[in-house]
Length: 200
Image (cartoon, rainbow, N blue to C red):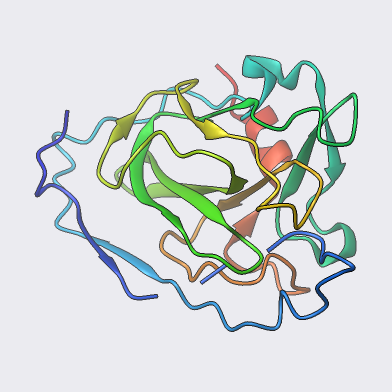
């Protein structure tokens, strides 16, 4: 386990999926959660060991990508159970790789419960995964998490959506949570493409 003071994580203050037709203002809020990570001792940091899918581990069995990265300016992937509706409500969410939890809280609005994990590929390369709309969160800020470890459950953000996991992957660690949709993908990676390329 890492020392409690290994990651000095400062929450400065943001987060989205498809807008609910019954609440047209859900994404008009200005989310601005930014996370900074300082004082990293790279001699003791545990690195990643490949990447897997966040549902139906390790290969997303029983799930499909309902809204892919950049589709409708979407900044992540929306993972749904193949039986549709809320059939996947409460299903487990797994960490896509070894990493350290940088955020695990309810930010309300269009996001609900959000988990963010920083994955250290090497000293010069880190990526951050974000898991949104969780019903439950099983981790806390500062935890070291192994690839495939259960970190929460799939939710519907208190009925705002049909149940699904909104997964984002960022190569700029600590970005504001944002809105989940944008034509500007700077700082964001295609999660499925990245996972496929980095399996072990």
